[in-house]
View 1: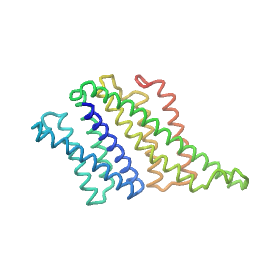
View 2: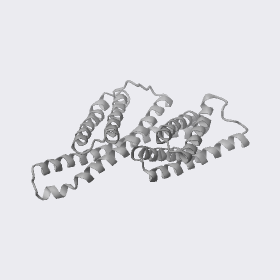
View 3: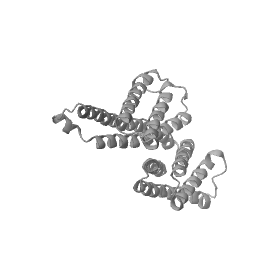
Length: 272
């Protein structure tokens, strides 16, 4: 049973890593990230296929008996289609969102079936989802903090250049282009991590037996934080905003993040 739990965790880890790779490719048109995500997802497909064949030929049970079992087959179909389309066509929008849905379906399957198939280990796996949810959310906040620091450094450097203050501070702050780029990269890494954290948190909330509130202040605040940084990426990638204007927006986004973390967290019904 322990080995099965470990494999479930490995599937989710590989799936989450591939999702981050596809997100980076979706935003940046990054072929290296796409190849990495493709091979990670291929490993997920291999593990899923092994369990599917084991159920069909060893246990003589095709996983469509009930809604929960069919989630596994549905997830396998989504992964299969994603791999085929990613290999034959260049449809970044479809591949990313298909894998996002597939990750959610696989997560729902594991969260709903693990307590029955793994007993105590299954309950442990479900509660570990909460730990991972909190950990990923905090790591994403860490990336957003780095992005904020780079934006503040950019604004300070920009101000010194406008005032023509050619002193040691100017050179120690770094190049404007690099500061702007580093701030952007940090957001690209933070957004998918926060997205995965929210998916884990919502799934845990519905399967743990505890009361879950969509209208909880921290839940709504976290969704809004994700939307705010989504707007940042829209302005940066689609509208082409760079430099001072996007740095100001990024600084405001971080202030909202702090409000969510400090204020909304204290008002939450079930978050610490």
